[in-house]
Every structure is written in structure tokens, then in C-alpha cells.
Image 1 (cartoon, helix red, strand yellow):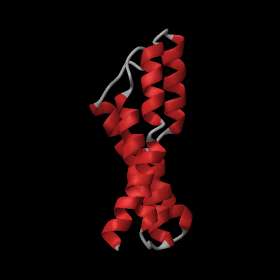
Image 2 (cartoon, rainbow, N blue to C red):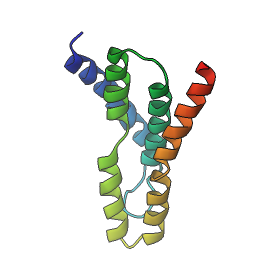
Image 3 (cartoon, rainbow, N blue to C red):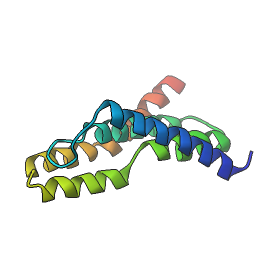
Image 4 (tube, helix red, strand yellow):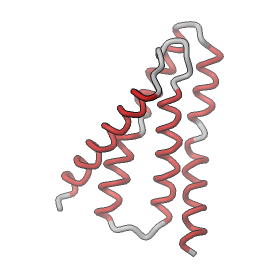
Length: 120
């Protein structure tokens, strides 16, 4: 299958899943910590890290890694929500939000290491 189709199909699935999480965990985006974005970014980083440790085919990585997890996780929303929290004067919520999202690389590493342990 063509790589663009794999990424597009995966992205559509991931984007709809991301929307579902934000509907299930609503936030006003101006004074509350946006937990939905934290959940999808940390979970997505963990799963991507786990996938990268495996010997997966390029097509699988395009569909699930670039496409689905790319559509699921959201750095742009993280940026906009951070600015909204700061502009609304919710500096403590913004600080918590930034700190928790910065854990994404650690969760990716943890996913990688756990996956390596199970594959060994």
C-alpha cells in the first residue's frame, strides 16, 4: 500500500481517538489543567517508544507510528492550551501542565525499555 495512504488512514483513526479522549475528559482550556492532552501525549509517547523497540515493518510504523500516533498525540494543542492558561492568569495550572507534558520523552523511553525486555 502507498505510504501516504497508510499515514492518512492511521492519522484519521488517531485523530478521531484523540477527539474521543477530549470529549470524555473536557476542560475549559483557560483555567483547568487540560488532562486529556496530557493523557494522549504520555500514552502516545509510551506506545511509540514500545513500537520503536520492536522489529516492525516500515508499513506498520507508517500506519501506527506516524499515522495513528501522530494524529493521536498533539503538540500543537499543548502549545495553545499552555498560552491560554498563562494568559488567563492560571500560572500554577500552566506549570503543572508543562511539567507533566515534559514527561513524554521519559514515557517513550520507558515504553522502549519495557518492550525490549519482553522481546528479549
